[in-house]
Amino acid sequence: MSDVRRRAPLGRDYFERLYERSDDPWGFETSAYERAKYRRTLEALDNRRFHRALEVGCSIGVFTALLAPRCDELVAIDVSERAIARARARLAGVPGVRLVRAGIPAELPPGPFDLIVCSEVLYYLTADVLRNAAAALEEALAPGGTLLAVHWTEPTRHYPLQGDEVHDLLTGQLNLDLTYSLREQHFRLDRWEQA
Ligand SMILES: C[S@@+](CC[C@H](N)C(=O)[O-])C[C@H]1O[C@@H](n2cnc3c(N)ncnc32)[C@H](O)[C@@H]1O
Image (cartoon, rainbow, N blue to C red; front, side, top):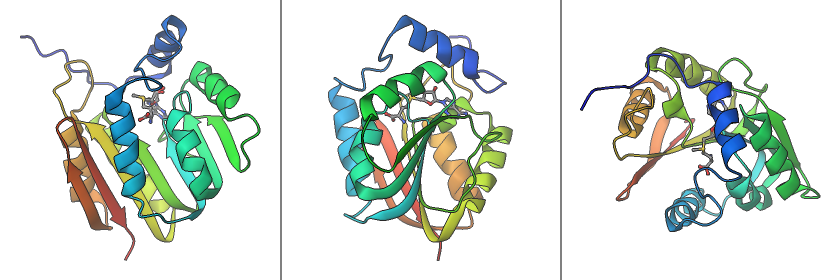
């Protein structure tokens, strides 16, 4: 099997094309895998409430709608305008949610955030870009803030990084305490907090 993993981040055009072909390219609204991942992600937040949260790669806003009730303010970003348009329709009228078309690391909204969630988004970056993104995300955390990452861990041939590579890189780089880890059959979830 030839290795077709990419040496450049998957960029905006790639995702716009996916959303042009399908309203819900990964089946976020319907798949049992996604439901289980969302449940575990919310459990990892320990019933806490957040003042100002950032969700990176929010797609069509399915998890955004679950996270919003835990946050006074939730900034949810996605590199794709089509995805953000669908998320805006889903979350119309939900208080405290701001949906912004933006890609990390270049367009990361200014912090501070007391929660940052990166769900299945960081393996579209290359290792070098992820190192920059991780530094920027850490910088955007409020004192005592929480960073949560969750990624599919089955092999992918077309993404620059595998899920485990993302989590290993973050664990090696972040100057944060790793306070929760979970590995399930298809995904890995890690939570880091500022001491
Ligand atoms: C697999 S979906 C994950 C959606 C959602 N986080 C979840 O887990 O249900 C990945 C999303 O990340 C977005 N994305 C990819 N690269 C990005 C980047 N550099 N910055 C922001 N969003 C990005 C894509 O447009 C896509 O909507």
